[in-house]
Amino acid sequence: MEACAKAKFQRFGSRKVNLVLDQIRGKNVKAAEEVLPFVAKRTSDLVAKTLHSAAANLEVKAGKKLDFSKVFIKEAFANLGPSGHLKRVQPGPQGRAMPYKKSMCHLTVIVTDEKKGGR
Image 1: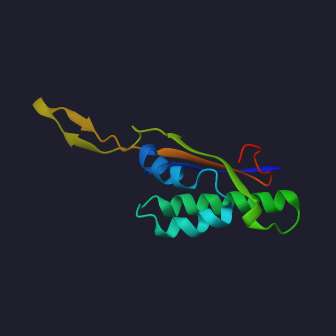
Image 2: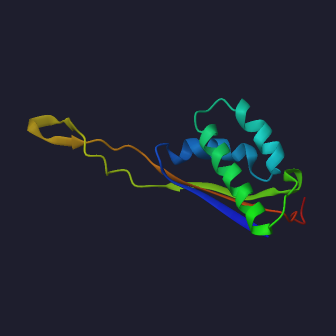
């Protein structure tokens, strides 16, 4: 059984979030939750919350309490979100207005209680 959790429109770049996701991808949820507080990136809190939400979604879907050492992270990725929606501008040359381009991302974490055959 699988469950998914998404965090959309987060004010972090997708490349920075993917650095944290690379460290937990393929691990079980319990091991990933132990590793995340020690990752020296600001995005680790966002990843931890989304991972916890995905694990809780799987518990609700299963209808019983699950052992998180047997629940694995099947997929974890961060895609680009919109980058031009802030209504702020910086002065540009010859009186032009240069809008700020702040990056956003959409984070998706999919967990499953079935172990992959290859590992």
